[in-house]
Length: 154
Image (cartoon, rainbow, N blue to C red; front, side):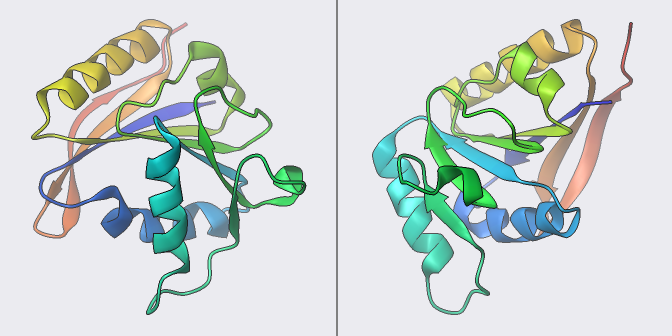
């Protein structure tokens, strides 16, 4: 049964929390799409995932000859499909069909950005309204606090 997890950041950047989230998804054997709203955003993320001090995380930017082989694929806009986990950053779109096709959708947003908060609320309403199970977490003291949970509905 697909799930939607919402992660509200409060001062942390997605680059600060993504490595741990990606590691957990990879440990499940999942293939992951990390979707951003703009190419320059994903290029920055690509550099951060290759940066010093971090463990290697096999990934690539979408549009290359080996997209289908990438365990972690960084995309912009419309999805590539066929991934177990979709992580949407900074208001990147997620459709109900994409959420139903994945084991998990993670919506990661900045709680201090009114536009990002509004987009995430709209995504929560759309996905829970479509019957998906959902959890809402807030970043607190370096960890995640569960604030709301909705079971799947028929």
